[in-house]
Every structure is written in structure tokens, then in C-alpha cells.
Image (cartoon, rainbow, N blue to C red; front, side):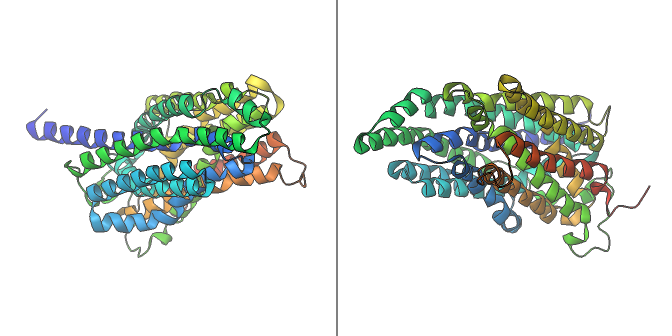
Amino acid sequence: MSAASNSKYKNYIYQITIIGVLFAVFGFVTWVNGILIPFLKKSCELTDQQAFYVATAFFAAYFFLAIPSSWILDKLGTKKGMSTGLVIMALGCLVFVSAAGSRSYPIFLLGLFIVGMGLALLQTAANPYVSLIGPIESAATRISVMGICNKLAGILANVLFGSILLKNATEIQTKIDNETNPELKNQLLDNLASRVETPYIVLGVFLLVIAVVIYTSSLPDIKSQTSDTNPDSMDISEGKTSVFQFPHVLLGAVAIFMYVGAEVMAGDLITIYGKNLGFSDDTSKFFAVFGLVGLLVGYITNIILIPKYIKQENWLTISAILGMILTITSYFVSGSFAVGCLAALGFANAVMWPAIFPLGIRGIGKFSNLGSAILIMGIVGGAVIPPFYGWLYHADNIFGFDFKSAFVFVMLICYIYILWFAKRGHRIGFPKV
């Protein structure tokens, strides 16, 4: 290897490592929601549907902040933009301390929205890096490596926060349910809510430290990492004046919407799903980890298969079909088998972001930043689909759904669209070959 090649390789590894750390941050902060949903349901005395607004507050920020994030990154540059995002996330964590003190669910949701704002800025910067830093055909492999960082951090978050926030959850819930003195009951609830304070203070400080590390690094701007410079990518941007002239970008955003909704349904809601199946709090609090393990196995499979043995769009097709099979199976089984189907959906979902994102920005050249922001907006699916699911099976049985049949109905809509995008949607706007 020549000196120039060695230098280029070291620079590539450096950039990938920095982005890998950020993806670990994404995973840790995002997958804590799987614990926050049952925790806030208890401490704030919420219904299932109200608890699902945790996902709504968090993921809605992506919709509102994705395009502004692309403008911020153009203005500040990559390093300053990422550092700003981490600082915003740290501020959101500190809001949790105030929310715990007052046991105010709206303030908790505000904190989640602020954390989501910071993540929107980070995701808008980081995902194009991974997609465009090498050949677009192998982007799913690189994103899968980032996914491993993401999900390992998510598993750590679930284990740590689950053991802190939901420790002895069944015993505490029994005490709360049986307490007839309003003052003593409020004291129990206040003590439970206060559990969130120390973990989120520590998390906020950690995010500030990472912000300083990113700010002082030599990470280059995203402007130098566009698909225009990639000889392996088909560029169809010539003569185009707007990102909205690329149908596959908009269709890809809808695919991201469906995928994130499906992943949140299978991952963040698996704890409440398990409770509805009859499992105790102390048992169901670890179910989200099973889904993360499924995702990890899926990411490793992606790295092995793509693109050496199968194209990313073909593996996306197979995974969408597998998702439909597991979803339907979950309806006809019960107990541990039903939970196992939801956990196995992690494997089916593992290729979806790694494949959809690069397919969505393929060939758009100078529009890569804005195109990426539009795809990031699709993350709002995590804000819309779970509460829709909660409404569907709690709508006074107008539609005759229980929690299992509503789950199947919503998930099949998501996977059917993803299947169409994998087979047809991502090709719209490209010349036929």
C-alpha cells in the first residue's frame, strides 16, 4: 500500500469511527424509549395510548427539524452542527430532571422532543456520510456496521435503564394500586418518578463531553462527501433544479416512515404488548432487548450477504416478506411464541434502514443534503403509527380490533409498502436498463 493509499485508508477509518460513536449515541438515546414508555405509564398513571405519545414526542422532532437541520449544517458545517445537536440533546436530558420533580407528563414529552431535535440534526449529518463515503452498492453494509454500534448501545441502554427505572416494578405497582391514602400514593409515585433524575443527569454530561470531542476533531464537512464524487453511482441530477424532481426520494421517505413505525411497534411497544399477553412487569421489561438482539443478528447477516451474494434491494424484498410472515404468525400464537415473533421482527427490520436510505438518495448528486433531510423526515412514522395502533384497539371496539389484530393490521400496511418500494418504487425516475 502506497503512502497516499495508507493515508486515505486511515482517514476513512477515522471518519467511520467518529460516525460509529455517533450511531452508538443514537441507539442509546432512542432505545431508552422502550423503557420510558412503561416507566412513564406507571409514574404518571397513563393509559396505553397516552404512554405511546412518548414515541410521538420523540419522533415528531425529526419531521419538524430535518429540513432546518440541513440548513443548519450548511451554515455551521458538519462538526459545529453535530456538536450543536449533542448540546441540544443534553439540554433535553436536563428537562427530565424538572419533569421528574413535578411528575409532569407534558414536561417529560417536552424533554423528549428536545432530545429528538438534537438527534434530527445529528442524523441528517451522519447518514449521508455513511451512505456516500464509498460505493452506493455497498452502503447497506456500511450502515449495518453503524447499526451494530447503534443496537449494542441500545441493548446497554435497556439493561441499565431497565434495572434502574423498572426495578421491582411489579411490587411497586401493587403498592400503588392498593394504596388508598392519596398522599401516600402520591409519595410512592413521586419516588418512582425521581428514579429518572440521576441517569439523565449522567447522560446529559456524557453528551456534552462527546460534543467537545466532535468539535475538536478533524472531521470534514459533508459538502465534500456527495455522490457526485462517487464513480460507482448513477447520477441523474443533471438538468434537475429541485430535489422534488426525484420521485424515488419522496417514495423513500414514505418507506422510512413505514419502516420506523414498524420498528417502533416491534421494539418500543414489545414491553406493553407482553404485558397485554399476561407477562409481569419484571419479566416484560427485558423484551426490548430480545428485539435488539434480532436486529444485531440481522445487521451481521447484512454485512455477510450485501453486496457479495445479494443486492440490497433484493434482500429488502425478502425481509419485507419475512416481516409479513412473522406478523401474521404472531396473531395465531400466544405467550412466549408471540413475543418471539415480535423479537424476530428485529431481524426482518435490520436491512430496512440500511437499504432504504441509500436507495432513496441514489443518484441525486448535489441534492444529497436536502434529499437526506427529506428521508430523515420519514422518521416521523415512529410518532404517528404507534399511537394510531393504540387508538385502533382502544376505539371502543368500533372496528372490532383487539391489541393483536390491530398490530397485524398496522404492521401489514407498513411491510406491504416497503415490499413495493423494494420491487418498484426505488427505480422510479431512473432510466430503464
